[in-house]
Image (tube, rainbow, N blue to C red; front, side, top):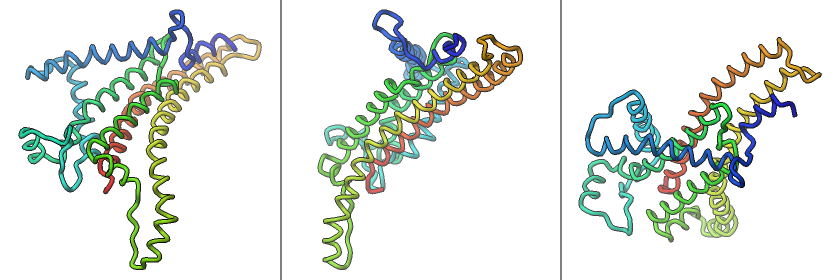
Length: 285
């Protein structure tokens, strides 16, 4: 492998950095630290009622409000019965009053901090690949897989807590009825088990989709840049002038596109998570 191509591909290839500790492991911890350093001071300012100042914090607040208002609330709702999500089957007077005043938003707001954390963490991981000598941890299925697993567990635990174990299991079983008792019996024996199996497998497929699509998009972008630089290398192993100019121009264009993709993929991951949450919490819809 030519050194130029190997350098470009280093953005998607994990390697040991500190003994057995790999590059992606260090970058994942760094991404979490960056999110904490940005958001903890902002949260403290908002909690005390102090106005948010500065372009950075104002931009962060605008992004987070967009996720709450345009992603979480439209997709995660209480259904027609307007039951609020609560713990241990109890809700205090304040929660009941808030749910009655704004039932459509109350359930969604329970999951907004989780969605914010997901978005910011994935975004920072994506953007780390734009820094020379670093990489995007989300270009590895070993990173996106655990992220999708966390989402899967949150969705299932939340659904069981809201619906109860019996109704949660019942949500996978379709209610098929006809005017003909014989036909109804045939459907129950043949079609219902098949649909129930498909519905049950669907919760695992949705988790796999989250992991694979994020990994594939981030991995593909870095591979494309590596291929562009590889094509600039002449057959004798030297860098041609024309190939170098073309590689720089095309590589710059791809880098700008990859910057857009970094934001887009973080947004899509959170959007799909909110949609899957809404589906699982309100199976009747």
